[in-house]
Image 1 (cartoon, rainbow, N blue to C red):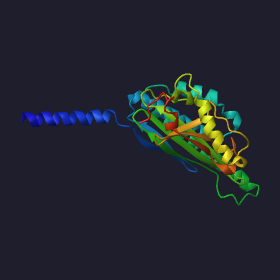
Image 2 (tube, rainbow, N blue to C red; image 1 turned 180 degrees about the horizontal axis):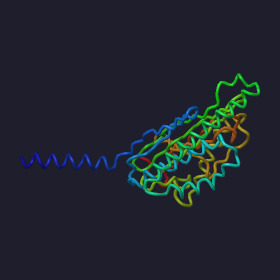
Image 3 (cartoon, one colour; image 1 turned 90 degrees about the horizontal axis):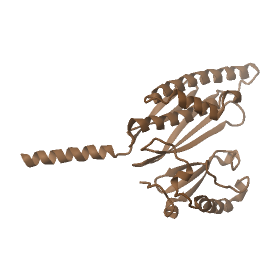
Image 4 (cartoon, helix red, strand yellow; image 1 turned 45 degrees about the vertical axis):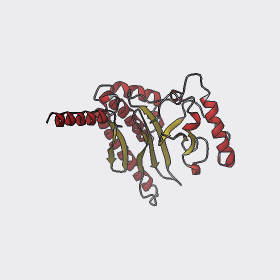
Length: 266
């Protein structure tokens, strides 16, 4: 009996320990208001606990807010001012819950604006336009013990030959909830940009006519980790190539950068 109890206790400990170090769950927060339909990733169970969950979710919600603001006049959105105000408003422990409510409210307003804009167009003879809409989805490219990479992609149509593709990618430290910069992946003083750009230049040379010119990867460019094997550098339409090229991505094998990596991707 004593052995059985010991084995049961050990099994329980293993279960608890494995749960503690398991990758977080990613659930979908639906922002569906009429012609606005965006699926937002929300994290639960990050290694850093509720604080990290909240910080990551706040960032993901903010990027959806930026998607929504593309439907509003340019004078109504300044990224730096908007992010500062957003962070101050929703920095509390459970701020991501309030942020989700705010995002839903903005989505409702954007839906109303899109409907009004469409009615304006129809009054001037644009009867062939079926609808104006804003859609968004996400893809989890990597979910490991310590890091998470998520792509958020959207599409807004307000008339014309085609709409506009919206794109963002973010990689998070699951222990702190902090969004990582490209430099955070590499050892201080390493020549990571030089080595990444060497790979990118070779890929551009394979089909140089597709690009506006040479592509130079810089700190601040969008990136994500793909399946723990590749570093993906990504550019939205018009940034390095015409709209028809879509979101342009360059895959750099992490094995080739292993000697200068400062993070353990697993």
